[in-house]
Image (tube, rainbow, N blue to C red; front, top):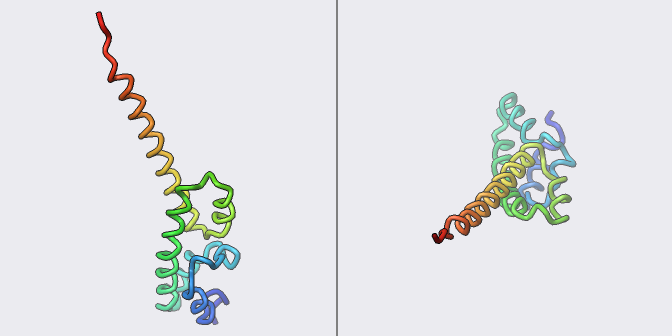
Length: 118
């Protein structure tokens, strides 16, 4: 017997639109536990659900991590599983790094672009 969040009925409802389901409310470690169940039970359909779900949800994660400063993202982040939060945080850190890098480059250009006159 599988846990309720890995049964066929749950998988079918998840596959309708994975982006709208709050997986964290079901099981914060849904992907981790699902991976372990796949190894123990050889349940290939769970692996398919996890793959399709993560692909679909990853698009939203990438989009939302770019706009993390808005209040809407706090609610979004609270619906992510452990693995998805790690992806979100990594993408957000990358966005911040790129922003700082671009600003440092542009500020150095203006400093280096001026010549001293003797």
